[in-house]
Image (cartoon, rainbow, N blue to C red):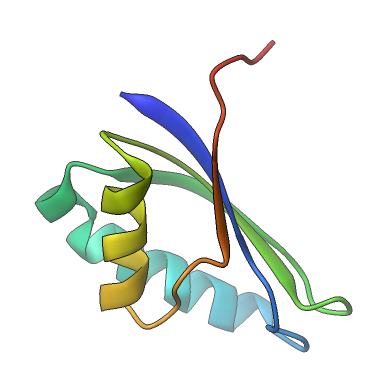
Length: 82
């Protein structure tokens, strides 16, 4: 399993409740793609949302996001962490 950080733009003004709702939507179907979404962060002022996940591919991560209505603008593999 590879770790991924994805980035969503244009979510200016997102609230904590909206972020939680989007994260829960991903969690509800993540297993169908073999993905696990670990954390999500947001900056309401800039409209940027970040999601950390593990999965078989960036495409699998994107399929979950597309199905839940919030396609990622960028998905980056994170092969190294400390």
